[in-house]
Image: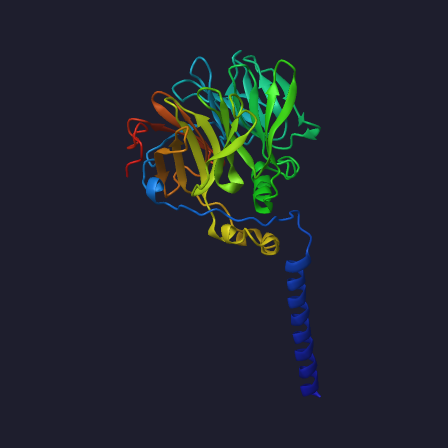
Length: 382
């Protein structure tokens, strides 16, 4: 009798194990997910070779306080040289020209990202939750745009302003809105993993108050920078590891091409520096697993159903580059230890490179004299 009971228990245990295994398999195969992955071919990864050879030029950055805030995404300077940074808490933090005495200047009530001052001294903000905003020196907030061509602006990200006052900015994803998906980082992962080309480049005309789509079909449209002669605008396409050039004047007006096609990392923001160069923040190295899954939507769905700690995630690696108008690498600064993690932006002044971050509780400053890398060189030195 005891033997029969043990056999029943053993059989029941096996059956429960089989049911559990079937449930696990069914979960990974058919459980509904929020993404509909698109097959694509990941471009070759240049790795850390040639102009991207590993170095430690970023290691000696100086941390600057931003109060009880974190995630200083972008940086702007006013006419007095004061520094403004956008933070995860919704505050625009203002610091004096020496980088000290941070104050919570204004809160947008959203998640401010890109910052730039217009010709009237107003701070223009790309707010991922609120759209395109304008803030006067007296901290009065005005909503400039919340939609474009009949579609809501779901993820305003970065911007630059032309000499005629037009504001060029990105809507990173029309499908995965930052507010709807509970955060900019969370929404960006969904958009990049799906690779559904939901990003767009927009322009706001202050004379008419209208917003126009210039370029769509981008895989997570991110940083924006106007050329020095204002004939084109550069857009970082994070999901494709490249930089797109869109012509706004001249014989190529209304067309686009690829300026830099194969980067070793995900590009975030881009800014116009002096002497014809642009600075690009590379937030995290490319993930080889994600690249290998690029052509398999089914496997990407399965990977998306995995527990969060098993999914491909960002790597903390400090990396910024300077390029010229032809896409050549002028300077490359790195920190393999990621002392200043997940760099999102770079702003150059006469004396410093200022660094923004997605997650850091401070923002960074690197003395150009002590960086160990001259930005005037045609190629970086190790």
